[in-house]
Length: 490
Image (tube, rainbow, N blue to C red; front, side, top):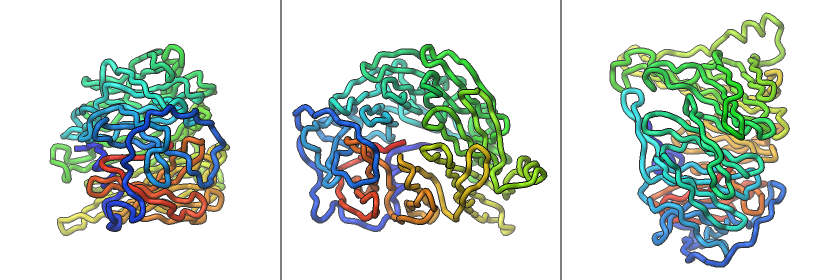
């Protein structure tokens, strides 16, 4: 059974962190009562890697109010003066972390409730996610929250703001397995348009000039998690009406989870295949980039020209080498689990694509047991227009992200059953920092800056560490009761 819960996720990220006290020795838990004073409007500023004391957005719990949006002092975890806690849900015991989205300028936040669950059949069992009945729109500058009912309710998968922050797109799965795309006015919550989608999107965003919406995903096939999925599709929709204006089927891209053999056997016996390509929509909405999981190829969907092209990834090659590379897949052992995953990040100027990932195999050992093998392809920097590898180094990557200025690259490693965040210089790939036991996230503060914040959970408390963005030294530590998490950048 596949089920994403806040506890499971946070325990996965911090299960083996070194034991720590329940609070920093010199910093009390944040218990400041909500203030009712109106907050001043936030002024956007250029994003820079510099230490800042501007408040951070935090989703937390209040015994009187329920789940709340908070603005906290990053040095203490206490409520920032002038920012009352904004309630949006009363489900402390909810199993799920609701999705959130922040507008590009940091002035708007969208978050959904997670008061129930929605489950459907998957791979002989079921998969469940949060059932949401409302989306909450937070005007960060005015520090006000507005509830917008979702009718009908369902599992909200993705949220995406338009570049100017004025509109919010969200995908919703219903009880019957249908998917809808809804477009809201992010200021007053008015529903602008809605349409059915032929798949559950795994990527959602705005296209060129914000005149279109882009959805990427796969139809589910006959038995989800058992039979191979149809090829992924890209759908371009008119932003005013959500009418489809262009679609492309990506037959070359292998993606999804399915059963390869012994499909009537139970979990752990049936042989399964997983392919997770690295998929990224460029910030300007011009290109959708797809790094294949099972081949050294890069597919580029030009959303302005509405064209698809695939190139081999590698060094400069002869025409024969390019031909052979374009038809070669990654050799892989056969066993109960055969999983390939890739992750990508794009530099702000679009000239450098960072590619990492992992390969995981379970194969028969000849003695009735299984051998587990986990390998990591090199971290590569690729010219996305040609597929040429510009740089590479050894690295372990289960996820990667660039800072908004493109100066630092963050990688998450879970291979040793303890979370590790490595920070590289994005230009040279030299190691800048190595942080164990915490998931380090990028959070935009209310002044428009970027904070490096580590978080973990232990014994029903959420612990946070603020790191200096230049030296990566720990600046402050504090805790919050119950499930809590900083609002991170996508």
